[in-house]
Amino acid sequence: MKSAESPPDWTSVEIAVPRQPGRLPGVGMAGFRQCAPAHVDIAMVAHPSVTLLVDLSDGDGLVRDAHGRRGRGSTVAGLAPGDLRLGGRAAKGLACLQIRLSPLLAAAAFGAPTDLSGTVLSLEDVWGRDAERAEERLRAAASWDERFTIAADALGRRMNTRPSPDPEVAAAWRLLLTSRGRIRVDSLANEVGWSRKRLWSRFRSQIGLTPKHAARLVRFDHAAHLLAAGNAAATVAAASGYTDQAHLHREVKAFTGTTPTAVAAAPWVAIDDIAWPTPFADPTSPTTPIRPVPAR
Image (cartoon, rainbow, N blue to C red):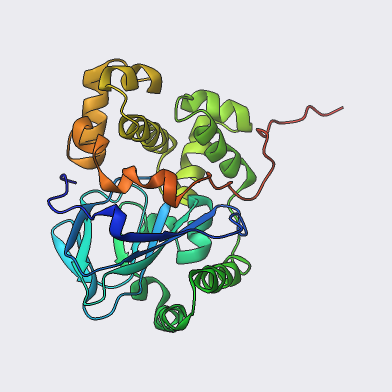
């Protein structure tokens, strides 16, 4: 993911957030609308969530370029989607609803996580005709608050009819988040009361990444936000648990294809504190680690 050639002027972008965030635990939403027509081309920075971008623009609307292939319209980006650029131009300015979902919910909302991890698909590919119906309702809505409600209802209906991940997998994912990716897989398995092999297998099938890869993604996300806050790369490396600055550079390169300096200036990260003012809570299962209880 290269640095953006034409980042948007955020002073001309309307950013809307729900009045009451957290209606669906594990789901975060934000609305974006350009106040004036302009061509946009920005690189998406990997985040520990599955991302849905619903195109609400007029005309050609949202354009995605992933793995050298271009497409248009609403997009679902899995965990660690690789080189993904988003942009385009519309007569009245681009507009989209961005939804971040915990990977614990991705299988219920979109299908098997192994089909989403590292991939970028159109919403139509995932939801079929339901995608068009959802887009029509969202476009016809009179306000962002109404759009947030429509989107939450659509996602909630899907989640209520699909099985949840194993409690141990959910607990392992939350431990990765709270430790900022700095817990070893052996320790993770011990905390949830599973063998390393069993955790590896179940986590991979239900989240879409191995525990080790997921930990790297969470740690990278923490480092990316520290870089965006203006911290020096050496300071970020030490604070994020990398062995040295070179290690941080390699991980940033692996997730973005670019450098820590470019990530620090990435528009996608720069507006995170505005679009996502509070972290969304992960759903399901207890908030404490699951450990086996000895028989009495």
